[in-house]
Amino acid sequence: MNVDSLVKSITPEIFERLQYGAATGKWPDGTVLSEAQKEQTVQLVMLYQAKIAKSNEQFTINENGEMVQKSKRELQKEFSQDSEIARFSENDL
Image 1 (cartoon, rainbow, N blue to C red):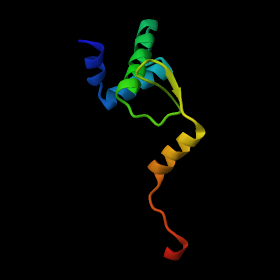
Image 2: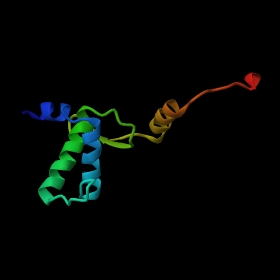
Image 3: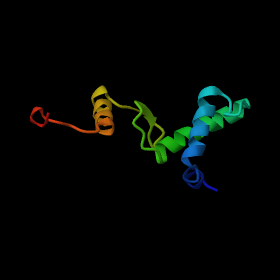
Image 4: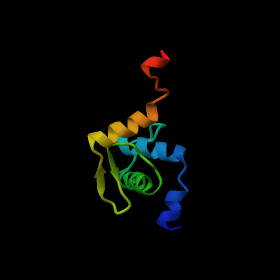
């Protein structure tokens, strides 16, 4: 299995478990990751973020393996689009 096939086979649920393992150093059931597992887990999370996830996080990894940092303006625009439920004018009230 090549890297692209591996990353495409990761479900959102598995990705959440991988993120948890990368962030805490253990799996959700409490099993501690070895150093090799930690390194591989972080690499998988970065690959998934770069190739699959459409993340609105400030720091992500692009397809070339470079860190991408979004500006405050970009983040505000993304969050305002995602969280807006309704918009009313003063005449509607």
